[in-house]
View 1 (cartoon, rainbow, N blue to C red):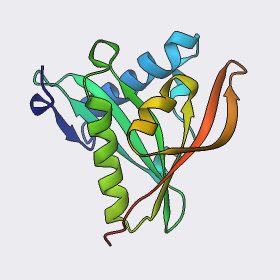
View 2 (cartoon, one colour; view 1 turned 90 degrees about the horizontal axis):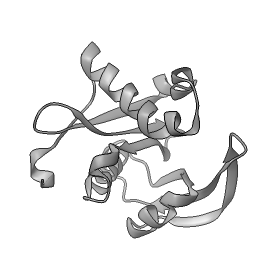
View 3 (cartoon, rainbow, N blue to C red; view 1 turned 30 degrees about the vertical axis):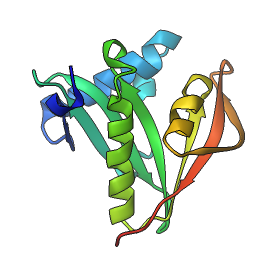
Length: 152
C-alpha cells in the first residue's frame, strides 16, 4: 500500500468519532491493560482531532493538536494501526498536524514521546528537551519540541 490511498479528515460523524477513539484505545491503551475510559482526557475539547482512513474507510491513524497557547500547540494521542506502522503514515499525520498548527499561528509544537517513539519524532525534526514522566509508572516519556513557521 502507498500513502496515496489514505485520506486525513477531522472526525465529524458518530462512526468516524467511534473509529478515532477505538484506534487510540487499541494502540495506546489496550496493550497496557488500561480501560477504554483512559482514552480521553480533559483536553479533548481544546484540541483539533485528525483521523486517517484507508481506502476501505477504516481507521488507519489518529492524532490531535492541543491548543496550549496562542503560539504553542501540543501533539497528543498519535496512533497508527499496528499492521500499518513503519509505512510513513505517522509522518503524514504529523505533517498535517504541523500544517494545522502553522495555520493557527503557532511557532512551536511540543509533545511527550514514549521511549519507543523518540526516534520517530527525531526523524521528523523534533528534539528531546529532557525526561518527562512515566505513564502508569511503566512507560517512560520524553519532552520534545520543534519550531515551526507560523502562517496566520
